[in-house]
Length: 115
Figure 1 (cartoon, rainbow, N blue to C red):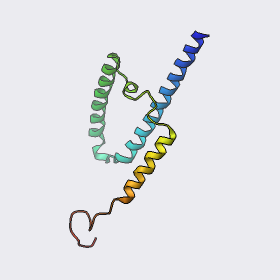
Figure 2: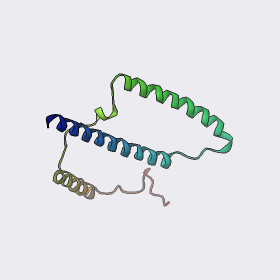
Figure 3: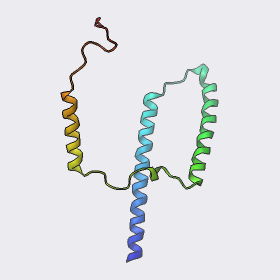
Figure 4: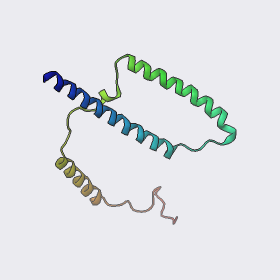
């Protein structure tokens, strides 16, 4: 029973890691599409060459990190930082702090001219 329990805990950790990495990748793709402009036709060959070189550097970096035993998941906290009640209280406190801050006088940049 103890061995089965260890296997089940290891499987749960693996599932959690996979879900975390899946969500991280999904967020990366969303940000990528939101902030990367389309490449003009005349610049595509140069962009492709640059992308291939940068990808090779990325693969080299990831393989060196992985070979050294370093993982992205190791950088994340393992303990529960706050429960739902504590998080709700923090959000309420932050929302109250934002509401009490007076808006700046005049537009950004210090001029009072119209738009």
